[in-house]
Image (cartoon, rainbow, N blue to C red; front, side):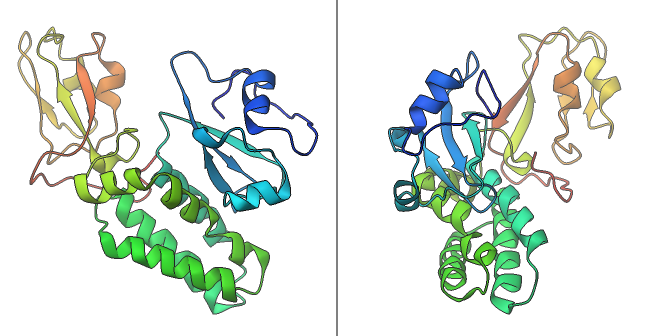
Amino acid sequence: GSVKRTGAYEVPIGTPIKKLLYDIAGGPPKGKSIKAVQLGGPSGGCVPSDMFDLPMDYDSLQSAGAIMGSGGMVVLDNTNCMVDMARFFLSFTTAESCGMCSVGRIGTRLMYEALKRITNGEGNADDIELLKETSDVMQKACLCALGRTAPNPVLTTLRYFENEYADHIEAKKCEALICKALVTYRMNPEKCKGCMVCVKSCPVQAISGEKGSTPTIDPTNCIKCGTCADDCPFDAIEKLAGIIANQSVKLEEGFCQ
């Protein structure tokens, strides 16, 4: 994850999260700040940065909504979207569900689809209730530990990062700039030199303009691939949180990074 020294470390039970992250792993790379850690594998929970004094033992982690699990830790920084992270981990548990009990088989799919709608900019308040209710049923009724712990990433991100869900659902924006449906690419005329590199590099011809002038991006054709921003030699293409009102965006399956 987002630390200077990634690797495998063995520490005593009860070691504070902060000691492992900062004293041993070296803290975040320059220019980034640690937002949370995902503990215990795909079925683990996310612990926010203001709880990093928490000791890593079974009872303490469980009280925070996480688990010791496999002993793994994924470090997430300010460039990570917590809603998309929950979707990512649910994609794993959905695929790995054995399907023996309907609660686990259907429950993981329901939560995954709800998270996809939210990261696609199509979510609403009902999806939050669906996530909470489905999680409660799965924790009580699933036959195996995978099913009972699969809701952990969802419940902890809802618990500690509810504002990010509100941004996705109400404000239709992703502040981490990860969910493609909830970001906008815009030309900065003060930086643009009219070189037309972006026009040539766009794979769907969504950018047009004449050499020497500032090109325009057609939001109805833009697929949010970011090729133009990557290729621009003057950093004149900005990636912003939020979408243009009433724009129709072409979306593809699995568009969240």
